[in-house]
Image (cartoon, rainbow, N blue to C red):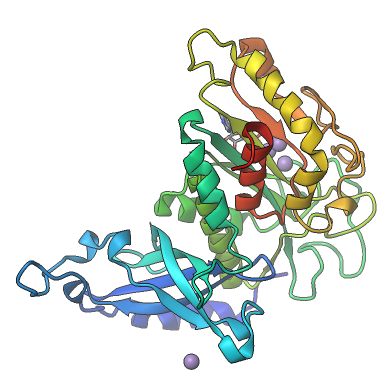
Length: 378
Ligand code: ADP
Ligand code: MN
Ligand code: MN
Ligand code: MN
Ligand code: MN
């Protein structure tokens, strides 16, 4: 289990340092997405009184809470250490794109989500946000909204699901989904800490639940409009990895962490537009939903390419998934590619769920290919 007895006395010792005054400086944690689909981060100090000059060329006496995204400077990192650049040209540029209150260090400290750029002014190979943002800009009149259900598995440092007997399996699935009680769920403290951290940071987290496989959990972010969806999900993933680190636990984003009769992990992607939500006069939301699903169908393989690695291990047509080779949809059908929730069909408007994306999919790639499949490439 995760409880390392050394942690508690160290945590107490740490408190006396955390209480020290930080003299009006801001600790900014710059976060980026690496080549393996994990987040990385490093810290820098920002002096709010040395950020912006007035007309006479004198620095404005900004207060920490007056620091906005546009005042944050670009930074860089050694991309040769993260497989994001060659050693002989290793500087990768970090461009701040979103800013959140820091749930770890508290106010006035901030989390700064960044895009990665190469020295020659092109987006880094793993910067999927840049193209996604162009698509979101082009189709902003549709007011696309997304809600992503992030499933994940909590693993021991030995890479076995937490709470599972070492090298053995627990009793078959059944009691664990939304389970309550010892023996059914583990690590609820991590889930609760993450929920609060997201709310503190202004992430539009809409809920959490224990999943079908023991040690597997889910949180949902949404509904969120356009590019903010990818930004918020990446921030929420960073928070989870960082919190689990505090508890001595690993987060696995793998879509099939344990093979056999155990549910995989997905990133169900719920989608709506102004028209599907019934906000456009003269159009029936449900008719627009059926139209959009028809537009998605011929793009099945193109979508699957964007929906994460090792997804073939998960999309088997079993364990509440559709087959990876075949596109299908239905109302309340959890065995297809696309599900229209029962209440949406009943109300005649709302959203639909793409159940195909894997838990390790990049939300920028998912939301982009959904848009280009339905509304056309740029
Ligand atoms: P499930 O029954 O598939 O487990 P969840 O409750 O886990 O459903 O997730 C539903 C998701 O749908 C949430 O992330 C929510 O934000 C999202 N959602 C709700 N309404 C909309 C909408 N109009 N557009 C896009 N997403 C939506
Ligand atoms: Mn160095
Ligand atoms: Mn769900
Ligand atoms: Mn789920
Ligand atoms: Mn779902």
